Image 1 (cartoon, rainbow, N blue to C red):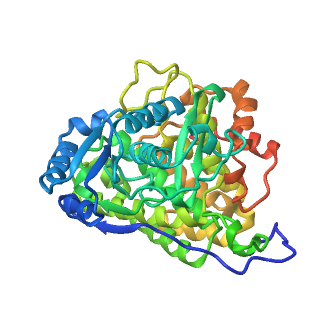
Image 2: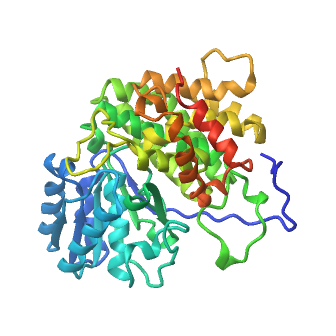
Length: 435
């Protein structure tokens, strides 16, 4: 990919790559007591949500850890799609019950992201909004090392076990944003595909679209050479598309092509679940370094401003003042239009991605429509909503959605084309009805 729309005076010549240690495979959860003990931890905080704990696996893991002589405290109050308020409750619990030597997150991206915030504020001074990205929060960087964090995903999608990002809704501002710093990356990811078998079809579909968009966005992100050269201390985790992130993203797309529809239809198909877990891990290793861009930037205001929408397979929060759009679903809503917009920055990458995702599918005659058509067909096949209108958004919401997107400059800076407010508005308009 050539940096066609960017001309830095002194192009970057260096990219960075980082990842957690990884343990992957059927039954990997049974080795968690060994991993925790290997850290030298004597007292551990387990972070999870009520639904995951109700399945019994959390207490099974906690008992194995206790049997190794390690005191274990469980916090099961994670909110699906965390808010600033839910994170503050988790932090208050951890501060009251601490100190701890390590943190163990068991659950989907919501549990892992909550554990990241808890870990940050157990080890560093200040409050949550001090560390939330600018301009929503104050963008402060942590000054002290965090505790070891082991992430055990029970869904296949977020990639949070690989990344430096904690995502949250800021209720007062009606926007989803995040905290981003290299110190938030988990120490170890333990990925056991057996933990995902009970994932409902709706959750598999939404989180699978998150995998897809992670891979696509990092694959089509600005190349690292399109940035101005930075000094070592100035480099951020999202450094742009690079040869290593490209390899992970391509492999994630190939795995999705053969497993995604099957995993949604046949939840107990272990082979499909294992491929989806690998795809999620690989996509996380890719975008956790290259970055994501327009679909993720749009997803934050979509999730933050939704009305009473209730997705299949997700718990209903009786205390919430609005509905729920799962992150992967929110990301996918504008993906077809976003990749139509970015096509001209790297046509060969968009066509290559489409070929990886749907190698045997007939193609539209217009090249820029090829990838959007593949994404749309996949969304329809796995049962996602047909566009923003089905989520309850109308033309009157466009201005507020655009405003929310423009707050995500950290993500928009990774887009392969410079994007204006009118471009964002056009993407939203084109995403009202996808089929």
